[in-house]
Length: 117
Length: 116
Image (cartoon, rainbow over all chains, first blue to last red; front, side):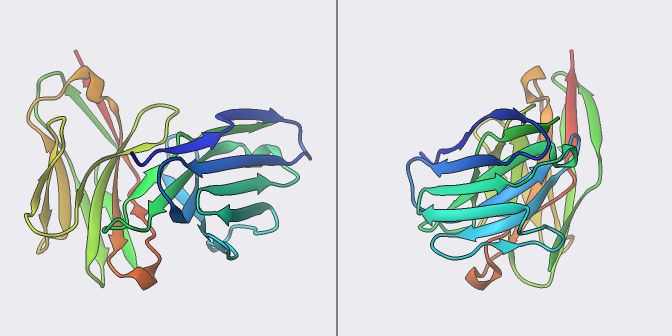
């Protein structure tokens, strides 16, 4: 149980285009999902917290107009990188929290590798 | 606010040797503690967690970690490592209370490299 999927697993796009990444909790309801960014050989940087049916809460320094997050249902959150540029190239990872579980454990998706040319 | 420090960025060891990956945290509130493992180009997998009760927690693949409140540490140990344990390991902390949002604060990561 507690499986989180991400789609696509990798994407290459031209500078200036927008890219949408989906994060799904497959076998549980996730009232809260988190989006992280990870640079090579570095830790995860939390970008935003997404609660179902409400606006995402962005961490300091993360541009909300650049990284649009939508959490329309209890099993799906999307991250759209708008007008992507090469500096947006990174590994994006989502996670989901099972509301019924004690302990704030997060279940992570496999990640999406974004390369902007 | 919480913070996590992983004292070693890289730990090279030989196969079948014991290993300890160190993790210290700071927090003004009670916390939950986690160790996650990340294999190349993959997401994170939970290795073990401390929520309450016994301060020694174990994983199914031989890792264990001990919560030490006085030293604010949660070091990860394995008595005999395998080549397949080669990965990046992240220590993380989360505040216990719902109004803290359930965020995980990660350490910088420790790259465990097991050599034959």
